[in-house]
Image (cartoon, rainbow over all chains, first blue to last red; front, side, top):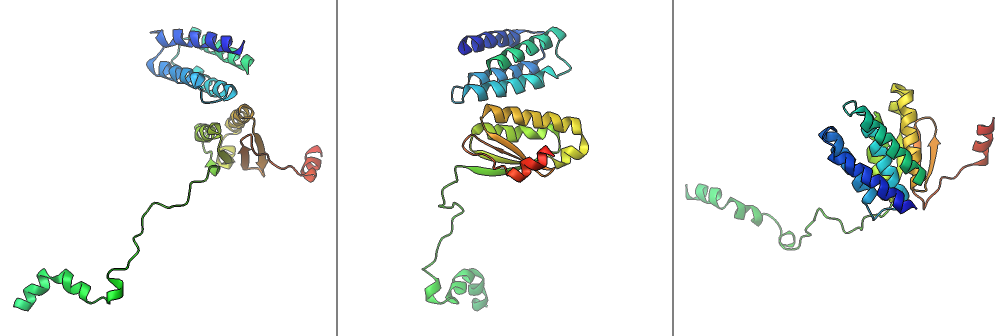
Amino acid sequence: MTKDSILEVLEILAELKEDDCVPRNVRARISNACSALNCKERSISIRIDESIQELDEVAEDTNIPVYTRTQLWDIVSKLECIK
Amino acid sequence: MKKFFSKLTGGADSYTEDFPEEFEEDYVELTTETDVPKAKIVVRPFVVEDFSDIKPALDSLREGYTIALVNVGPLRERDMVELKRAVNKLKKTCDAIDGDIAGFGTDWLVITPSFASVHRNKSIKAFDEE
């Protein structure tokens, strides 16, 4: 269940990373969130916490498109549910 | 004149002649590296002057080997809303690492990983209830 949810989140993040409408610095931070979520050395709760905080900061960026921000909030709420 | 040149060229040799023999060969070479093994658990202080200053504290807490002493005094004086955000963020990370968080006075927070907990006195509880 947890694994499936994480895979789903990773898929959405991968889509956002390839979206040309998203600024490059935001894409880089989304990539950081992805790698934090993929880090196998840490426990699942720490990985989720790190990626949530990264995405929270990304969502505050004024340059991202409105729909991307909504997508990010959706991802954060999904991650919080896994927690 | 010859003496003068020998003084110039062999200055170093003549310098060693001044030392007694016991100091010439037996010496201890000091290295900058210490043989003491590095401690596994670190108690580390952090000063939070801005909201972004909590990031190093969070990163080292996630490593799992750091007991963080966080001084939030400067941020408290600047912006209470930012302070609340920062403390919430620290709390969330503390929950994620299954650790413990407590405040000492108004300025200091202590955050421990899962292997440690903060002792709470009954008298402090009574104070909170009042």
